[in-house]
Length: 252
Image 1 (cartoon, rainbow, N blue to C red):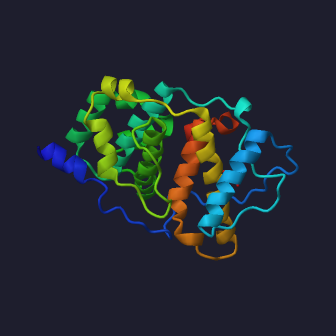
Image 2 (tube, rainbow, N blue to C red):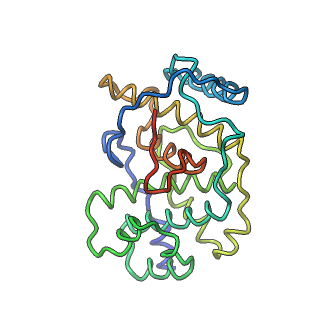
């Protein structure tokens, strides 16, 4: 029971501090101009902009720019890839909460974690004294784990991106199951559902970056770090520019 109490206590004091950076500051990029949008791209954009306007979030004005790829050009990650990524991200969060070595070793044995980590993640996982930046980045991966749970059908809807996820609730989805059970009970969302969220988060991230450029707070209470992590994770899910996890970019 001590193990469970410690595990499920993780993340409860996670700060919703929008002034702290969970990763390198995003570069300001210029969207590709004059795209001839497909029907599904236009419909997706219209739906996202309707949401933004309902929350008083600024929208990008150029009608021929800033789109996620059309549905027929996108291949999303497989369910097994997403399951593996969820397990890896959950482990990173636990280490960032300074879980003891026995807990982490038990977690690794139960879910075969080390085989699922990227080279950068493995360096952090095996470090006896990770840097403060490594700890911060890993802690924010709780938001990426949250995205993977959504993509796998364990979470029904995203909350508005103004607050961090409940880490303890998210960890329970995995820890209450064996790896085999977690994999078998998952149901990967459709390409359309994932692209809809990818389009929306692109626009929310643009609004946050636009505010930063103007030295203004993020609009309508958006937490820029939560938005960034969702954008990063959804770009990985849709194989944005075929980038692997450690190399994902969040162009706006």
